[in-house]
Image (tube, helix red, strand yellow):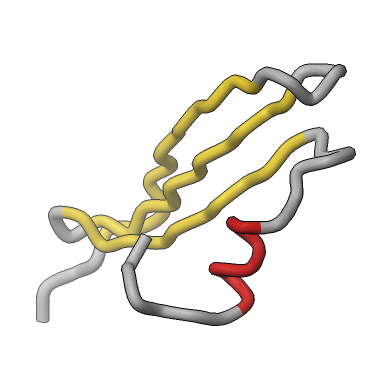
Length: 66
């Protein structure tokens, strides 16, 4: 995360995870001329004491050069 920034996104990352089942962070990025959607997930165990992280990338559309 970008250091020195403030706002609702920072607050969301710093908030308590009590009762949280899953969190997702989605980023849209242009990589090698392709618009991609990057999905980062954190799924919490039933007791909330452990979690599993995963990341997936979905290609959306290729940008045409002009």
